[in-house]
Amino acid sequence: MKSSSKKLTKKHPHLNHTEMAKVVSHVQRPRGDWIMNSIMIEGCDVPFKYKRREQYKNLKGQRVNLTYYPDTETVAGIVFDYMKLVRIKIA
Image 1 (cartoon, helix red, strand yellow):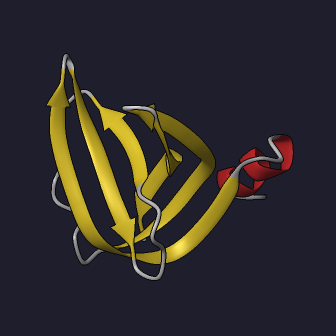
Image 2: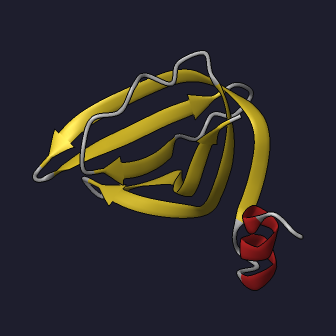
C-alpha cells in the first residue's frame, strides 16, 4: 500500500514531499483564533508556514516529514515566497 504522501503528490502535481528534514527554527504567533506557525528547514532559505487551532510543542531540532506547495504573499507591496504546509509529521 502506498503512503498517503505519495498518493497526495500523485493526485496533486504541485505538491512536494520532503522526508527527514531538520527544523532549525520554529515560531508560533497568535492571529485571531489561529496559531500561525513558521519553521525554517536546514539548507533552505524559504520559510514553511501552517496554522493550528492550539499551540504545539516546539519542533526546533526535530526531524520532520513535510508535504507542501510553493506560494507567495505580498506584504507592504513586496512579494515574499514561502512554502504552505499541507502536512507535517515528526519523523
